[in-house]
Length: 205
Image 1: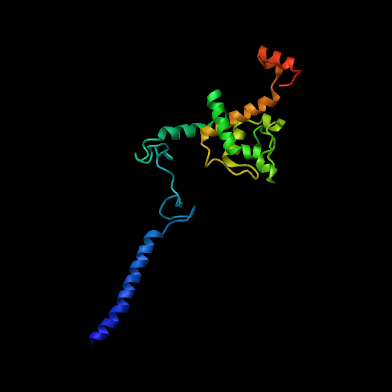
Image 2 (image 1 turned 120 degrees about the vertical axis):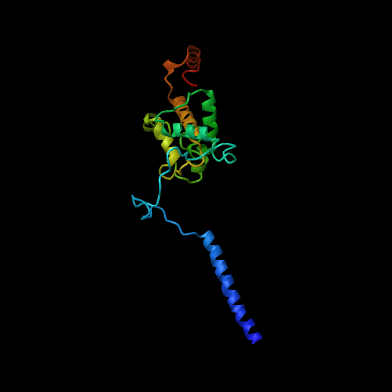
């Protein structure tokens, strides 16, 4: 009889352990709604809920993780300002242009080339060439168009919104405008000393 009781205990123990393992797995794979799934819990029938008033979309910066998100909200506001601007919201000075040049050389130059003519090293190895920045169409597009292409991609170009901050995208836009101006500057708008140098070289830079 004792042997029979032990024999029954072993399967029972295995069933209990299996149940514990299943409960443990349920903690990892909890029931949840899929994206855009309906829900009868809310009046509008949607499972996805909008953030409550005053919610910050995220926090950034060195101390954001250690302060519950209270620090870093100034960077979020800067992002919001940059993301909603239709023209470059920052003064175009040498600081902005140098920052734009730095980001351009990292993210854009491999395809667009240092001169912005679409003949980068990646293109020379077989990747489809992007259009030159120096064509009339791209010289005349609004700044926001270039910003949106950087953010969302275009054609075979992947989006860079996940790796280039909004402020840096505007810096790149400023540098691209400088590249365009370098090839299409009006000589009459140059300072007198530069016009004299240009005349002395026969119109060559």
